[in-house]
Image 1 (cartoon, rainbow, N blue to C red):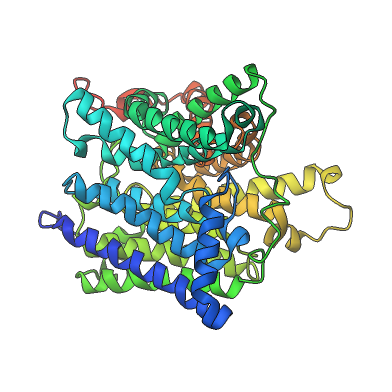
Image 2: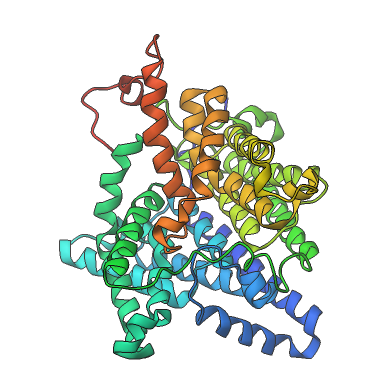
Length: 473
């Protein structure tokens, strides 16, 4: 049995992530110079400008938009901004903070950039001043809420708005909206957490999705023509839609090897393989911080094994046609290996989503060309990207597998695939954590259904809160 970790110095964890971010930025520069020679730096700068001035709606693939080099440099810089906020707040972080950095890095390949995330972080700081709390009480939630980054970028691209206040006015409006949503997101997330009983790790994506839906309805009421999400055909074309498969796979391998090396160097051992595959922080659904229970070497190895799982899935099917969205999803899944996601539970959700994709293929023949090959269907093209982004990001439902078991977990994964492929149109692509929103709805539907047929009361509320006097964490 692994001894409880009582000696983690979290600045070490921040250094580990800082090193990963440096590696990510360096990799972006290396790829740029290998592809463009002496023009590599200009390629990075031009690509960053394209990224910073884009609407950033859901499914905007920065790899396809600007190229591999600029996309990875942007991802590293965006995550560094979040890391700087954590350090500024003097927060001795743990699993939640490392998971937040993973989201900042992963979504830095699709939708997040330093310009559209800073107002949200600053809005949370203003909230801390308003309620007279330390910034460290709210900074982690603020980093999670960066999923609303498109809300900041989009107003400058809405004709109905720019016709009245101009493009500069749209930029200012977007920044003010970011400040406002950063200000309120902490209260929103506390409220929404109750609805899924801790079974959705992307709780902020659930709350932010409701905010984005409300904003879309407000836009519609004001006469704004619906925009976003970015069409599947748009993020499946361009220089990043297959020409960079080698570079993207190399990064996933680097990410996996990085955490395996850090894990072994931190004292992890394959003798603890059971703990690595089946980490469990608590019997309740809410407590998922593996850093608080296990030695950090075990936690880092668990992250590395999640990377191995991603490689086995993508390469095992003959090589998935990668893009920035899928790689971002894998980064996010690996990063959450210290906060609720385990190899065993993630594999169940991935399997459930894959089954959902298979069912869609066979029961909806009118949607596809009659001669489409099944292997093509699951490895390349817009539908394959939808399946695998939903599979890897859908692992936010890992606690549901631990609580309800693998059989229900497979069904939950299938249901999740049905929701996540359609729900983005309700928020017009303004919530990057589309899987978090979909998972919230899945939990609200599946939890009561499972309990309705649970004759033995295996999944009752008392299982979530063994102590009736326990307060909501």
